[in-house]
Image 1: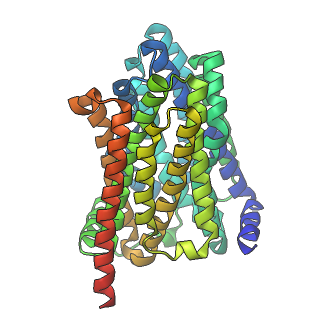
Image 2: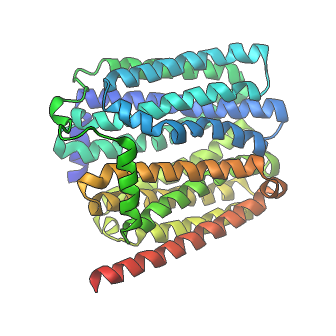
Image 3: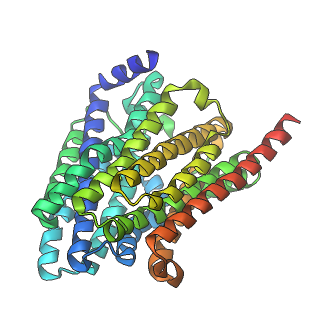
Amino acid sequence: MAGEQTFRAILRNRDFLKLYIGQLGSGVGDRLHQMALLGVILQVHQTAQVEETARLIFFGTLPVLLFSLLAVAWTDRWSRKLTMVAADWLRAGFAFAIPLIRHFDPSVRALYSVVFVMGTLATFHGPARLAAMPRIAEPRLLMAANALSNSSGAVAGLLAIPIAGFAVQTLGPNPCFVIDGFTFVFSGLLIALISRSLRTEPEDATPARPKSTLGDMRAGLAYVMNHAEALPLVLLGGLFAFVSGVLLVTVLAFATTELKLSEFGVGLLISSGGAGMAVGLVTVGRSKRLRQLSALPYVAHILMGMCVAAVPLGRSPWLVGLALLGVGALAGLASVPADTRLQEIVPDARRGGVFSAKQLLAALAFLLALWMQFATGPLRELSPSTVLVGLGILSAAGGAMLYGLHRAATRVRTA
């Protein structure tokens, strides 16, 4: 009951509500954009070709690795509101430009540069939003604000992916890119209407010495390497990102080549994973007992691996959707408690560096997973079913190994 009252209280904050509705709008646009890209691939190749899908996602994610440190530094030096508005409206411009680009070059390769630029703008938008949140929400409501903000992607995916799949199948990719552009215009407009100043206040700066983002990240990495409990949690984040990178591409290939689903069917299938993620986030958010289980991230990751391995066992879309529902729910149970535990055990002075290191490791693992699918022979030669079974085994085995490290750290701390 108290949790529900807290959520109602933060939603009565008009500035937060503008930001949250804008996030939901751009989240819907993101899902429409993703399904439209899948539609382009299907138009060119007739199936969700693994190499082409992996390349597109790779170019969209690469900016996280290249520019995340710059984005963090930018966020602390410039207006966060202006950064978010500019990122949204520039992404709108590039989304509007895609149909024109495709008119002159209908190939998938023509979109690599656009996807890269839009990924770069998203890399600047995310840190600005996270840094602005304490300016928007009261301290007592900050956790609820972050929970709602972080769940917006899952909510948007649950609501929008089936509709996006139907829209792409009915209208074609180009009109959907235009609609995507308008969602970014809408998001930027709502953020521009936020009344609070989101600039960094003078008292937030540290006068003793200039901040070095790279130095903070190095210090955070050194801290992680020497902290027995933090290390397996950070490594678990990297494993989770790698599994996600392979799973995202392989499920699309499995759905179009082995299940023979259309864009609408693929959208419904992916939305089952989003629904599971929403269930997992709500469950862990409402259950105090679950949040107190230090082993939960590892156990959830092991069970998630079992569900991934079970995906190709069901030749019916309904059974596959049920397996993906379990994957999403367990992903939610694995990711949120891991970040919460890191926030609890890492001192405030090291927290930014630790999470920067964790984010870069996750980006590197995700990009490695994508690169392996379009640049190396073994994964390209295997069927999607075989890859999914192997990925599930890797996820479960990796989770078990990191749980062993966690248990060793726990015994040392209690000895």
